[in-house]
Length: 283
Image (cartoon, rainbow, N blue to C red; front, side, top):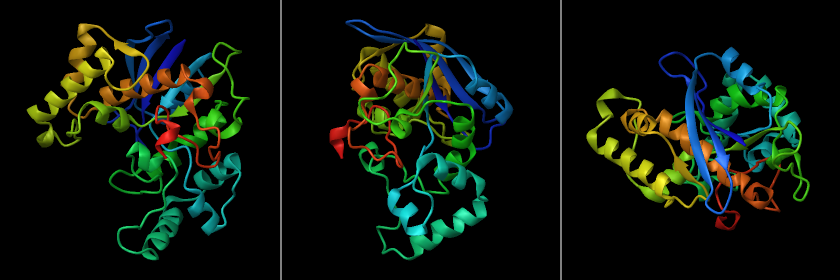
């Protein structure tokens, strides 16, 4: 089974591309995720072409697929997921930013943001955050393109018990991923920075530690990572962490493929979705 890991950016360009790890899940008593190559997509046109590559394949995408139900209901926005995606992505960022700020301004200190059920156990930023990191704009830039490409979203379109199975048809299956959750199972220290001055030996050491944990299987994921010496060196050398994040997204998607129903909670909210590899019991 082909499994992709996608480290997404809302403004792809040569200096900061959408990074795609290309690998295969090899199932069995000791499953592995075998990294084959890494692609760099520098435009949304290239990203859209990637999304339409024939299946079957599964992708772990590092961007929010939904927003908190509490925020959506408060604003009176559409509460059916496909309609909400089109509504959200069809609105200018400036208008959405106004509503986000209004929500935060009305809340007490220490409880400014709305959260999805999966965000806090994953340790991710709230999906409505529009700066540092701007995950709300990552969703704005990516999710409607993914929906338009005809991808299948098990956490949003299929109730428990009727989610598509691996090896059936030509499905292209999209799962939300968040690499920070898995990285922290191995190392709590910072391992990346987009600022060259902050790409320190200590962070390189943390990346080396994380890669070793992924290979040895100590990150809480079912498959172990296998990769060439060339790619192992590249993952450690990349100070921005995009290569490592893409690989972790692929591993999280591969792990989900080995779980019944992709490991999604049976009572998940299809408007909010879920993050692959985050145990349902951690809410």
